[in-house]
Length: 172
Image (cartoon, rainbow, N blue to C red; front, side, top):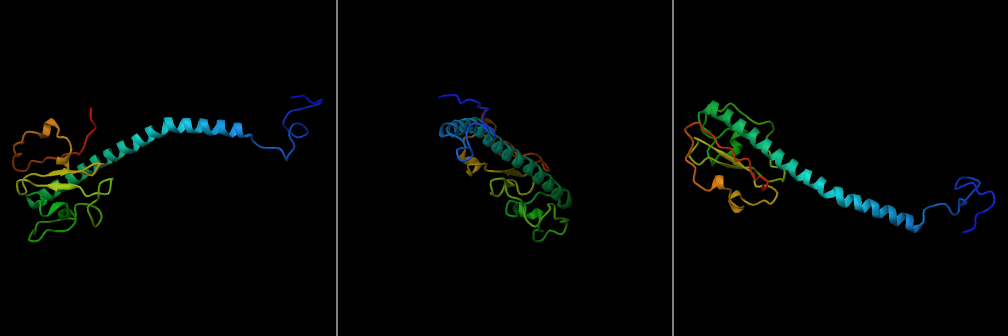
């Protein structure tokens, strides 16, 4: 390429005129390649943070629901029965005069971050409870690989005891 006499650069009065201004195809391809490389490095990490935050949110909601169930117990002397479920925290179960709820804000029980209902169990008719969530895969807790802590049948806690399963945890 020949240098022109009096060439002053790419600004007004030198270099390309306004009809030729713009980027070359090579420049555009280089910029798009760099952007693609950055997204391939950053994208998976951002998605990982999103998944982790949903699991943390679900654990916090399980603790909130457990606290509401404890308030239900203080008022009624028992935990909600399995047939009543968590709905007993927002509307009174039939034949329960000591109910002083609602124990949760809103007209319904919140759903987990993946849009599914929390699972509630009261295996010993109102003396203890278990709240779980299924996680991103949507499978029942028994469908995933069992953890050693859940393999042996644990004895029921004493009257007034509680169990709160915080749902799926990361493999370590």
